[in-house]
Length: 214
Image (cartoon, rainbow, N blue to C red; front, side, top):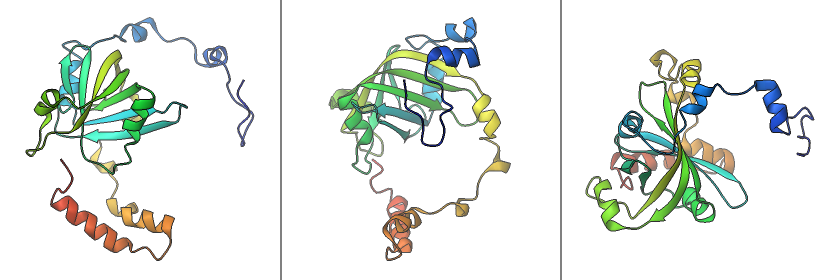
């Protein structure tokens, strides 16, 4: 049994407790979960320019990372296999290190304007196969690495989360000025001596040149 949280002892510890509160899923909900893509669900993969990748290490510590490119960048190799190219990043390689320790991954495909999303759970491995990676070339640069993902579960996620959040409603879009910049976040961590403005200006210039994008 789990230990009490530091803020409360009112916790659910077993699936029986959970089911007593929530009930059982409808049979039709369970029936949509498959172990492969089909002609309908592959459209989510083909049209998604953004996917969130969930991984965890050998001890179960989780990480969630966004991946984005032109729509269809996650390639369908066959009905049970996806290839997610790895683009240049900050070299922390959280997701990649996790996959080495624990191959279980989850993907959430998001299509602009659509309120349904698409979920894939499966097992991943890291490939350096140049022939497999070559079709993922963008701006003249092929990725050096990619994740080969064997699908174990694939299913659509209903619209409620995106509808409740008004996610695609332009009237609800937040002015970026309301959020801290990357430099301001660094300054909050490192102290007032950190030059946030210089950091932001240099990063903006790198992005303008698309330096390190591919």
